[in-house]
Image 1 (cartoon, rainbow, N blue to C red):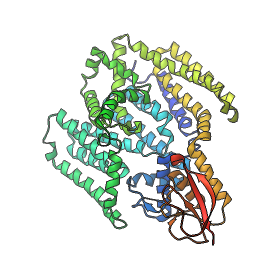
Image 2: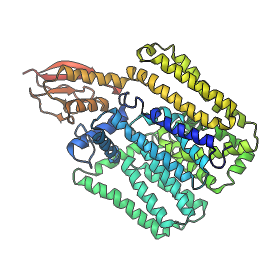
Image 3: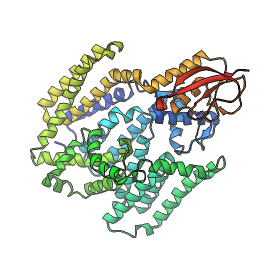
Image 4: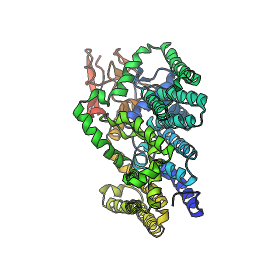
Length: 530
């Protein structure tokens, strides 16, 4: 069922899946307004473009310490390439890195698995719930960062097995430096736990004595140290370390009580079964002793599992971690699950039928959701909504019938069904989300303010940093980064965020107020009364 090369029929299905990935990921990609994290990435990149300073990240002209700058470079390239700074151009790098990640998964798995299982591992990653309906739509660092971290884990054992120690250490230390410049301290944990796992498994505790280890370490220190040297030429580099450490420990055991940690330990696996549905369910087949024994008779699957567990432990004991923090673990888990599914099928384990029913139910779930959506009042505001819903229902019905008649292909039809559901989601759900989104409301407020008061620049009064969404949209509308000032005169309007600072003592007139996304609070536009 899952072994060997692709059949002719499966090849056609793979080509169709690859074709559907484009509309699934790109339709209405730029429609939704930014959330807070996306706005941070975008405004930092926008200010870099204008200042020409690609070393010190800033927001509203003030240093931003919570992430290194590397990912912002990709946003800048996208802004230049598309010639526009908006949600679309900020999110396209996410899709590019998602594609690169999928290719990397396939290429890495082909060292150990046949073509069919390697393709499925990659497609499962692309179409699991969290990726398909959330992270692929947003301008986050995490897809790019997860690609780098996955390669650190995979190469740690792959190159060790090949006994290519020089390449092993140079590559993983180099990638760790890249990961640090993307997101900071968590990169060191992936490097540490991966190398420890491999050295313990192979009982080679002297591996750090290899000259490649120290060469790789030197390269990593030189890359990170070189960045901080350049940073120090512009600003005090020491200011960055505290905020970076805070970001790395904010949702971990360091900040929470033992009761919260214990609760999280039990709930976390269930949360992830939900977030990465449906491909987490085949993993339950490993509870069968014979399936478990045969799957883990393969050394590389044992290493996949050990690397997964050792690297996920820090998140397993850390309350309030987001699912996007563990995307780098998915290829390892999905590869094991695919083998579990194949083994259970070959052994004719009764439970495998329930997994097949799960895959077969996916188009039916989509049909039910589409029918329920026809009664949503917002549907009347979407052009050709009934036609789109009807097409989704018809296509999913065909896929259900084909899957029912060709159960040996049901796993492929389930992937196709998820992509059709995502395309329908793009047309029907994203516009509805956008319409009532707090970020969209805040964006409209900034546009209204700028349209109403176009005759003078708008500056931020002292520490009135607003929120990141409003800051981004105001900067783009004004065609330059926002300025923070303590000078009060007639040549400007001023934004006062009273959560951060009081009104100026000079005589002033409050002209308007507008809503900020963060904390759902009001901000004020003023000018001098003189």
